[in-house]
Length: 501
Image 1 (tube, rainbow, N blue to C red):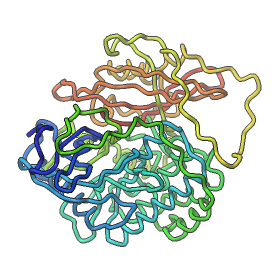
Image 2 (image 1 turned 60 degrees about the vertical axis):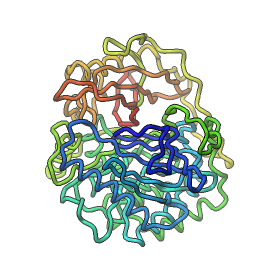
Image 3 (image 1 turned 90 degrees about the vertical axis):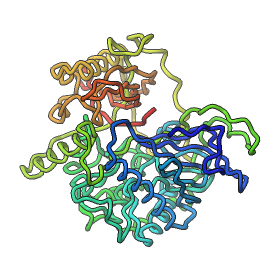
Image 4 (image 1 turned 135 degrees about the horizontal axis):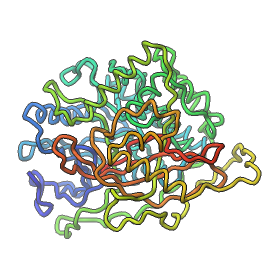
């Protein structure tokens, strides 16, 4: 069923425009005609080919999200107003939070001041403690699920939350979450606990202050190995937050920094913090009424990155991303059992084009993008002397290595793919699927070469292809890191899924 935006959902809610999208859900800005207010409505959209057992499981998961959020009454947790069943499908009506997500803010400002991140962490942890006290473990804390509205910080998307006393959708060994922000116990398929959310809080705050995720790899399996066996990337910008983040990212839940101590330390560090920087966002939507014209679906202003979701009791199709995740978990288990630590590094962005690019792509770098707005800390930050006579990275070299890497992915050429991948990550190359899909085409986005750096993030839009049917399966924006070594050789050093389109 597709609801006509000109009609009222359940005779009350008028859908206005799309403000967010995930792998199986769309979030609408909508108008509540009864109470004369703007709301957000989550619609579940399942891909073709989902059988009745899987459909029932996904519907039950959305119901579970409504129950989890409805249990919680806290200013730091999104409020659920209503749950609907229209056309046999569930919908959730929630408060509309203006301002976008932490992920949106980080895209614009790269990284944030330590004091601002500490204050942000205090508010997030206060909300998490309220959820834990009510018997709810979020299980998917990440920048995309942290909404910002003025000084308010709001946790959202309880779609895979664990409810105390409810095991109907939990299977032993099931893996749920977003790879880069998952705790080691989640990677191993163990039960999530409040300590699991503390790890994800630490990973989220690390990303906010450092400008990159703490762990990564060339693919999901590589990320899992890094989370299970390696230390996080070195702390460069965290400063006084280093001890708190290291404590939250302890791999042993029993040793992990507890909520009380973390809250006390974050409160102290964020006491005199400047407010978060303002987003460079489009103007707010105009007020609406029941008679206002409905605009066409707009841009996805609050993209919801792909999240690994376990299927229900009925087995998933072979193309389900979890098939690949299961392999990755097996790899982690073998690595741990053998006592072998595979050195994997994460992070990546991109830019380039080639035979598999979209029509109109050029194989050269577009005029470098304007630098993203930078946030100037209120207090002087620690500075590091620049390397004398540093030679800027070469755009041509960046384009060449990224083209070789992406063509290797698209053409299923492992020799070419390995040749473009930095040596420390080659052992983590498990195949050509990214989140369960092949790359049919790709298009590099403009990028900025940072001054005095030997690595940069690049981003590309991929057209996905179903491995079984060969059909295209939508687009996704992913990011990579490209590094230059001391011998002036360029490598693609890791992949991390970003957002769907």
